[in-house]
Length: 193
Image (tube, rainbow, N blue to C red):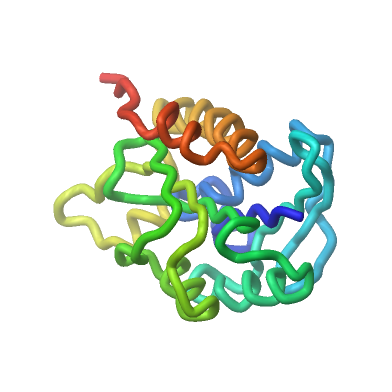
């Protein structure tokens, strides 16, 4: 059983914001696999299915970003999953260009409150993750306003492609091919001028 968690904030006002790109990737996977992610369990909306021959749980924590670890901990405990090999977290990263992916097997929170919460609840930072680049905060912008803001039209097009790429990376990751996914997808994307 592999638990794939996209981070974001619940409620309609946060739909399509930079901070909710993890939810967008979960929606893309759910659409591809024809999975409904509507069951309320473990402080999340979850759906169950099969990806590349592996049973998967798709989860969108409903705790708000800063408390994401509560939901992840419940999911890990309930499904008795190995949090180092059977958990994939997808989230936004402002240090990466719009649409750029960075796949990692471990690492610090890097200032991301959702990841900080997960590390706190798991007691370590050795879990698989996909960082989704949402672009650097413009000078003079408040960080919260930026990550809770919406993508520009041209950025949204790039992010939609990036969500598809994340799905391809996840297909490799669920079959123990994380290194291959890193080799293929940890590179810069061409920016639209």
